Length: 196
Image (cartoon, rainbow, N blue to C red; front, side, top):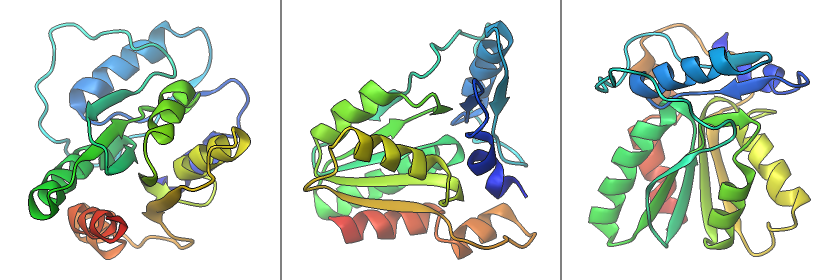
């Protein structure tokens, strides 16, 4: 069950743990893994990607560096891997409906986390949503919460984690399973709306 990958892999010493947002970033992260002198793992879901156009040549991504895809001041969404594109879709829907502005950050790395980027963004936002396609126990959102707690920046913040709860996920079509477990576009939209 891939829903547990991040939770058990992030405890392995010196392992670089990555999750691409789309096919093009997968190419970049694979190239980054090959160039890295040490162990690495790339977490990606089964099935087809979002249809991103591939560059002619992959780019090396600095280890532990994410990217801010959309700026906004009312809510910060820290998304990983397959939850990045749905987070952008949901954020734009919610912005249009509520007239709010939502920042969306693509973390890319679970280990090492893009710590300085996350800390800077969290300090500029009071409300944070962390989205992953993994069990929340010990996963990406746990790593982010550990960072925020250790750096003492949680006070006065509202943080919600969106991921798979403590259960085995049955087999089935990805879209239906994501919807059932609240991590599809609808679940993201509902979580964002509730936080705003």
